[in-house]
Length: 352
Ligand code: TYM
Image 1 (cartoon, rainbow, N blue to C red):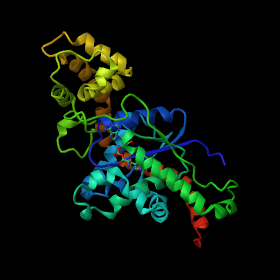
Image 2: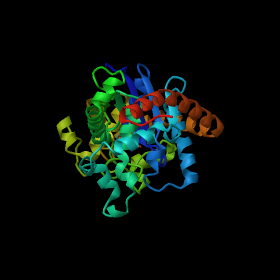
Image 3: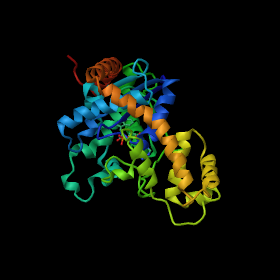
Image 4: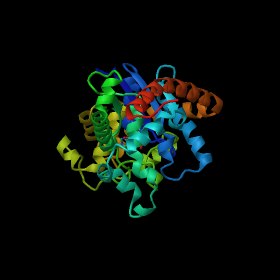
């Protein structure tokens, strides 16, 4: 069966969203909303794979929802909801816990990074995290998943799970009316744009992340103009006396490469044009980066300022955010429940 094109993606409500989330994923979400049926989730079940203070979690769920809308998602057009409110996510994740193999999960680099040395003490949920992510996508038979580069391995796992499920239950899937025996599509990762991997402002070899202890390493959507300016001013560069003269040279200088990528993404231009801007402003001094950083600050404030103001405005009316989530959850449930019922039939559960 040819599946209807459907987009699914999500972000964790663990602290404030940052520029990596915005450029790596959100910009694509907004673009795809113009052409596709889209489902955008606040993945609160994923958030609790590491400890979350319950009061802060509630606030973070609302704030991420507000950030989605403030960035340009239209909750009337796209479905915007929080994961815990649609039971199919957890139900399908359990089925997938029984489909995915330990060997597959053992290869997941994100678990290794997040669990660190104290692996014995990591939650079982953190380990099974990618199975829940596969369930998020496949509960809607979604075909396209816009994400940053760090999610690529998880999406490959989702594809493997879809395929194994289809193989394991082929006969029953055909009986359920899917002539070609395919209940789950192979979801396509959509990893595009000039900033699919935004790096830390303090270390060009590490990705920008919510879990990095230093707040100076990232620009948060909630940072005000002064904070943005200060973070960019203090962003690490290097000691070279001249700017890179071409893209190959730029690549060899990770911190500069990152700043140029961020500039290009925010200004809606190419990396070449960003590099040219750096070259053109390098004589302004005192450092070769002074002029470039000023331009980067301007474009960051211009793009992020209105988003921050809108998040603050929306957060002033939490009841309205809750209404948006309730509406989104109902619409999400309407899609996922019949698919989940088919899964239950196919697996051999008696439904009552
Ligand atoms: P999360 O919450 O860590 O990040 C949300 C999105 O932001 C992207 N991203 C970045 N992109 C570029 N540079 C960065 N430094 C950067 N940091 C984060 C992520 O790639 C992601 O697209 N497991 C997911 C959430 C999830 C999900 C899903 C995504 C749960 N279920 C189903 C897609 C489909 C996560 O933790 O994202």
